[in-house]
Length: 61
Image (tube, rainbow, N blue to C red; front, top):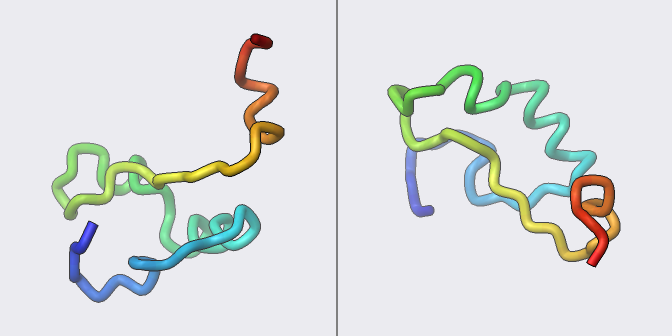
């Protein structure tokens, strides 16, 4: 997304440890913007490149 509003967390990539700091500072978008009235933030997008973190939420194949 190319949304330009000057928010410091945009256009960044964070490790799992770093994203917790961002959430602590800015909160979860679904808490402060549940209907999208404050811009496009509605969720935090996550890309996981390893199956191990997902194992507790997925069924065995």
